[in-house]
Each structure stands twice: as structure tokens, then as C-alpha cells.
Length: 557
Image 1 (cartoon, rainbow, N blue to C red):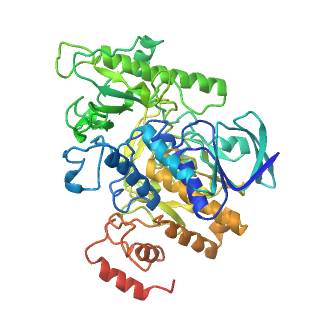
Image 2: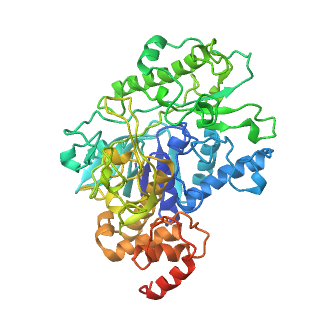
Image 3: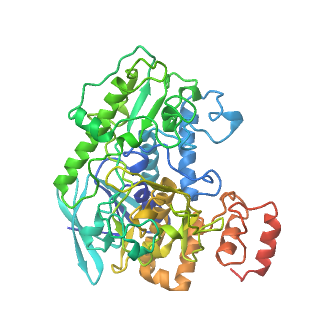
């Protein structure tokens, strides 16, 4: 039996969900295929539920639909629970509720809550058919096109599924090897990319470590929720070097402390019996797995690495409960009052069902974003991007910003943390060098290993997926191909107009929300060069006058 859709999205990651929504909004019939039972990837099943975002995310630093997702999360807590008067909860009616009062993000959400919101967004869209518990077994390729995928459906039957455009939205870029697409894994050499911090030779083993997060509840002192000693505990303790303080952390329970870092529920934020105690998601250097990376070439070995990664996180729970030096008593060890909230994930061991994947296989695209394209300075101090934004891209399909953040742990690669300039997502980084109807839907786009450290975050992945979904729908409904949209000015302009219709910013104006009456005008005029971006990402007080002058000088829309 053969099944057909305009757009086939493989992978229910955060980017996969937004790709499906974007394509359906643009008029395509969409099939969204997910191997597991969770939608949302890093925000949900991977436990990174205090999203890593940018300084402008509350204003103009994301797409309209991502802002809608954040609003729905806050509405969930406002409408179902009684909030306290704690700043960050109601804060005199401020819309910026942060249920965990965490300091890594301006927002937090329980993984199951985020999953339910994303699922509702998908299910209420009539153009999307969701299939869960399905696996891609192979691909039929002809004339540099993906003709069909062989997919084992939940009941066990194998179906041939074809689509005008196929989107790989798996967290590890699983479709890239299956379809024979050209891709990269690990670090490119400096000779290849010209990146100052790239190694002299390719290092395919330099892949960022994965992490299995887990939720802990801080119960009253005197309670004992110590878990049994996990398998291979001594080995994992030695391998991981369990500790507490990472990065900017100043203590365990102090301001900017380990506990508040990714706290998801702050009891002080609620005046409600549903949340008597704090709950934090633990995702730190101590459970970044040091014994191997994903993906590898052998599925059996990958499964073994995943299993060891789970044990490393479970061992960290045990260490925190029994051996961690207490901040309140220098003579004591362990916090047995920390309770593993296994119910948050409903897994046998209480650890997140899927690892947080920082780095995927990456498509060999027409253009690969490099370190020097986005960083202010490299690790040696050499200056690269001097303006308030990274270098302008006329083929922009969205925006993003985060540090270039490379975690150490999975290999001998040193960690890196470099400031970047707010950047645009180039259409050329989404177009394969050869295959004509395959698109990347999340962190598997055309970026180098180093640049990927700034492209893996929640609003960026969502923007990538959403823009790819709109592109896929345009190609499917107008019978064209992604490369043509890149190369034909009229098609590209039509595509960018659709993105603006969708509320996807193409140019960085950090303080200009979608609701502002000048939002679309500012975006359009900035992209065609009629409106100077100035020396700040923020619009300055003379914005209205500048827009009037730019509008009068602009070409007709």
C-alpha cells in the first residue's frame, strides 16, 4: 500500500512540530511521523523544559507562533493554579510569569504540560496526520529525489510513504544517512572552514555530549528519599567526576545557585497545594555523559552508550543524596531530602525518556554557517562581527541568538563559550548540495560543528522547523523545488512574504513585537535595505520618523 502527502515530516522534535504546523498553515497536507510517544523533543522528552532563549525573546526575538507557545504555557499555570504575589508570578499583572523563577530562562514548564500543549496544537490542525510509534526503514531514491520512504507503522505493517517534500526533523539527523544525503558529523578542519577555533584535521569524534536530565523535588530536611545504589555507580562516579558548581553558579542554594538554575516549579510562586515544594530539572556538567557520544555507526553500540548515559544520571541522583557536601553543614554529606520525581517522565528509572541531543548529523548545504560568521571574537580574541548584528543575509528565513556554546565531556575537545551577534538563518543553509526534495527540520541544517553550538536552542530550532514547513508547502503546492526558491528572486521574495505573513521575523529588531503596527513594515524595509539597522538591535525612539522616511524612499511592495 502507498500513502501520499504533500509534506512528510519525520521526527516529532520541537522543529518537527513547528515544521508540520508551518506547512499545514501554508495549505499543504502533512504527515508527521514520530518514532516515540512524545512530541516536542528537547522541550519535553529530553527534559530541557527551562528553554534556552535570547535576551529579546519576550519582545521581538522569536516567531509569532513560538511566542504563542510561550503564552499558552503561562496560561496553563494562570488558569489552573492559584499564584502567589511573588515577583515573577503575578508581579502586578505582568504577563511574564516564570513558574520556576529559574535564572537560566524567563520561563519554565513541566515536560508533560509542554507536550500536551504541543499535541493540542498539532491535533487541532486538520491538515496534519500524526503517526506515532513508527520507524523509517529505508528510502527509495531516484533522480536525486526521495521518491518514498519505507515506514513500519505502529501495527507492524510496512507502508511506502511518498511526498513532494520530505523533512528530516529527527534530533540526530537520522534521515540523512538513510537517504544518502551528504552530511557532516563532528568537527571540520580549519583548512576546510577557515574557522579560527577548528582543529587542524577533521575530528568526527568531536561531538557535543548528550545529557539525560531528571527532576528532583526538594522535600523538608529529615525526609529520606535515597534511591538504591545504581548499577556501575563507582564507575560512573569516577567517569563523571560528580560535582555541583558549573559556569556562573555561585553555590548550591544561593542566588545564581545550582538549585535555581533550572528550577521548573518554585513553591514560592504558587499559593496552591498542588505545589508544596520546589522541583528542579537537573541538567549540568555532572550528567553530560563522558563515556561516548551519539550518533555512532552501530545501532547496538549506540544503545549501549545510551544505557550508560542513563546510569550516569541515575548515579548523580545517588551522589547528590548521599555524598554531596552539604552547604548548610560542612560536616555532613548528602541531601537525602532530594526526591527523584519519576512521575514527571513515567520511566522505570525516573530519568528523562530521551537524551538531550546538543549536536546532530548536519546537512551539507549550499551554504554552511561558520564560527566567524556569527562570533564577536574567537577564542584568541580576534574580532569578526563588529556590528550589533551578524553579517546581513538577503536570503534570511528567520533569526536566532545564543552564545557559541560547546560543552566538553564526550570527547577530548575543549569546551568553548563565545559571544555571538544576533544572526539570521540563511535559506542557503537549508538547501542540500544534491538532493532536490529533502530539507532539514531542526539542528541538522547546514552549520559547522562550531556554529552548531549557537543554533541548537529552542526558539532557533522552532524557527528553523517553521520556516522549512512554509518552504515545503510552497514547493509542494506550486510544484517547484527548494533550490529554485533560493535561486529565483521572485520565488524567494514570495516565500519571504509568506514567512512575514506567518509572523516569522527576517531581520533583527529586538524590541519590536509582532503586535506592533510597524512590525511588518520594519521587517520589509530592513530586508530591502531601505531602513538602516543602525547601531543597535533595538529600535530607537526616533523609530516612527525613520520608518516614515524609509517608507517614502522604498520601492513599491
